Length: 235
Image (cartoon, rainbow, N blue to C red; front, side):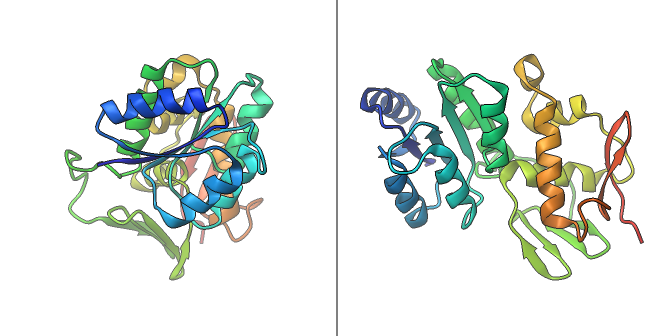
């Protein structure tokens, strides 16, 4: 059973989301301020966190950043702000996706299910892509079963989207993917309908900051100027 944390200070919204998710057989915990959300996230490894931006005590960005210090559990930001900067900020702080208010609960449920599938939390029907679940090159290794990344034996904590992005590139070394292609493969086919290719740039930049010895001179994830990104281990 999937465990979801819903964080919003508007109790009617929380009640509606909780009812709808429980109808899908999910277990739902609720928090009404940022402090409570962080405490619950520390105690439980949730399959998904639905996190409102405007919260008492700690706002959604601060909560997201705090959770990212100890967990890569998927986070969807809920925001009444529709500006590009607010969306990019959420991604910069470690969110996997965002939904603007007012939202359709059917869309929320669809996004939750899609992200849980991609994050490996719901792998019952997932086909094995290759015999070995350990992939990589050079001193970078990825365990696709436990979804862990190691560089020179040191574990690197990646978000669900960062892992998915890196896995795609590592499985296809030297293949250049456009930002549009990455948005489709990693975020799903629906992403291109309303997605912003800058989402890809944000995640690549954040990924490089975590895995590259020198993000400005990448060893693993490279840019093909005017085309896109590719994986290659530079000697």
